[in-house]
Image (cartoon, rainbow, N blue to C red; front, side, top):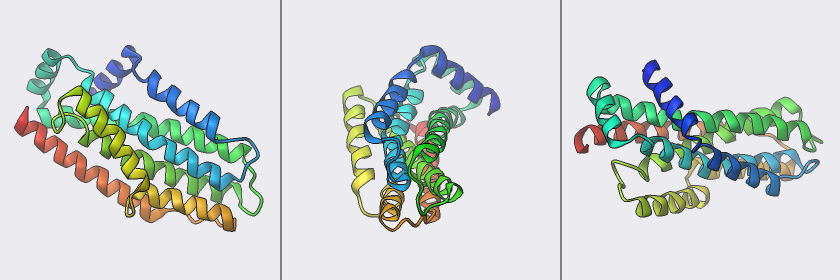
Length: 216
């Protein structure tokens, strides 16, 4: 698996396709977060903006290989393992970028009534919940479930939107916890949302790997 992860990471960074979602996230943060605003509300926006970026990143990694290269890798490592490596690669770097963003926002936001450690913990858990939920959306909106590019992009946008507004979504729960915490200056770490997102992402990954082994 380590070799597959290195292979997928190399493809991603050499292609420079990671630049577009990274710039999108930078624009979201630059427009939506201002230095000195209440830190919990800013962290809620920072986490929420990570969801479509994570979904896009996963879709990039699942579609970046030429068909011939994908066939060779699948023959050597198995389609399920190759698909899982692409999923993990696509989900990993948004988590890293979100972690950096949370730490920066925590350092520059207004922390009156909230300690830096409490704010950072809540923000990191919320970012993890949103990134993992986004990864699940990206996996469901890509091959082998949706093959046509147009339909895949439409499913990606719609799925990201629904994941942010639908009751019961781990991302919505995490974002709401931080927004409400900003009103009461109480940083309640969204452990349940992060755990739910982890279970959701794991279930979708297992389903996607099983499906790609059967359908491709």
